[in-house]
Image 1 (cartoon, helix red, strand yellow):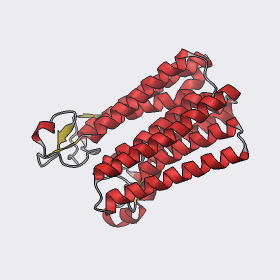
Image 2 (tube, helix red, strand yellow):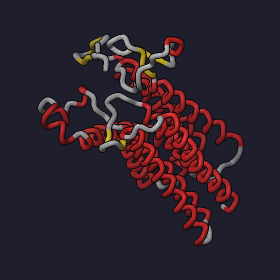
Image 3 (cartoon, helix red, strand yellow):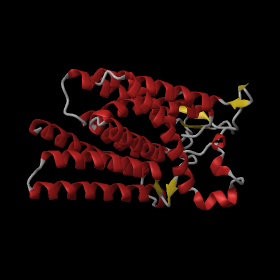
Length: 315
């Protein structure tokens, strides 16, 4: 990780490049949310109220999530009062997602709008915010992977150089690119035809969740984890399975088909756990294990998209 260097002080508050980028990311995400919200609801005041609520909730729960996961280390390795000193950093993507969902739920209770319709506008905006936030990791050198020893592959953006001058995989750039492509793809897809309410959000959750599992596996930085299982991988599989279950409920299939789909999803999840265990603990070829992972994720993605398309026809 790079030692943070401030570039300005405003009203006694130190401004750092990473923090400034996060503020820009949040602002652009809020603007996209307002644009999408106004296309359906035409109520700017409600949209602004939600944006404020969402930002506060995401920051708060991102902090809570990080501190909860690192609880046993904070008391020993961190300075006193770290939990309350937000400026010191330490946030969780999974916690931010929980905060965003809670904000959407509160917004639903207050305004009476359809939660699925609200989420259809939230997910593309969240992906845009995440894309910029990932790029901002350039200033911290979080989001990096293993060393690149081949000279011909040591070029930006495939590689960045750590504090020791060694070339490492710039995973954060690929995470940013994937999030941006998903955001753009969802925006284009929602324009092509009338979509079943909630499909934009669920499709975003499915694809982001599946891609996050692979990308998170490449990281070799200060990622959050439980044992060999990484928190963002857990987030990814939860999002993907949630989308699959929601489409399955909407489809209302026969009992046999429902059992088969659940069994298939559980089997694919088990394979992912075994692959990640193999990457962390075994001497098996990493290339082979990643091939298995990608194929497994493709199966889960196919299940999800098939259910979405079939349930959309039934709706």
